[in-house]
Image 1 (tube, one colour):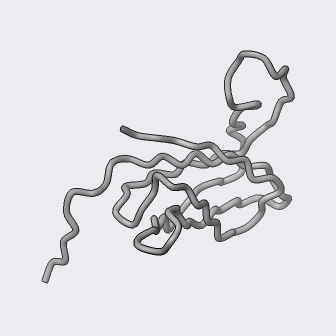
Image 2: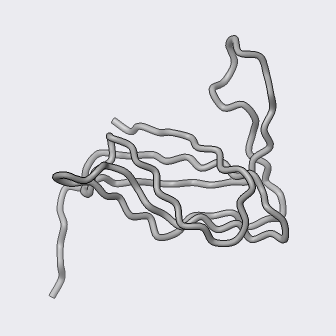
Length: 110
């Protein structure tokens, strides 16, 4: 079963190396990460969506590369990635990390 977590990074600019430790992720996890500029809102604490705000699809290029899950014996589970925010000033960015089931096979072609 897929599981997701959403993380708000405030004031991001350029290429930033990120790490998010999360127990459901391990070295064999299949992980998908999406990112977008974000406009927060400050609604009430009762009811409504979990995400307080919404993605803002503006002119800035916001994306993720180099996704690398980690976690084996003795290491915390999680994922490292590069967050790219191509804009002249810092932006708030929302990142959704989704972990799927573990990979079935690891192959090394000759």
